[in-house]
Amino acid sequence: MNFLKISFVFSAVLLFIIACNQTNKLDTNLTIDKNTASNAPALQSEITPETIDDLASARKIYSENCVTCHKANGSGGVTILDDGTKIKAPDFTSERLKKDVDDEWIETIENGAKEDGMPAFKGKITDEEIKNLVKYIRREFQGK
Image (cartoon, rainbow, N blue to C red):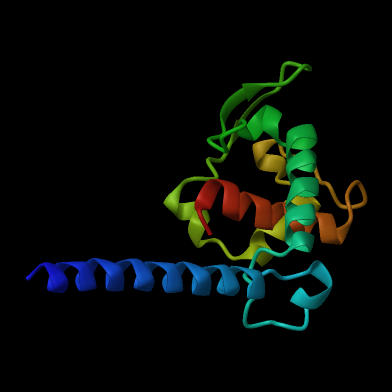
């Protein structure tokens, strides 16, 4: 009976050591260099270093141009501008805005919404920055 117990414990320890050794081998094999990541599309996720940079740039644009009216959390609401103009910015977290297509967002950012008091940003920020701003809003406030 003692022999059986000792054999069982020894086997368990041996299996544990083997499993740990294989895990270490797997970890080193899964380390992906930035240069080789583009050659392995199956291992890449949606968020690449480029996407992170684009979203960081869009976050800066949002904080410089949008946060006054749309708030840091995207909830919008009534804002009184420096010139006394009262505007009501839409809530980016609303179900209605989640359903709008990106092209509508891009058009509004480019041309503004005069009836709501939103200025046009075409020519102030690039087309690529506008697209990244929409991506940022979608991810940050709408969970997309």
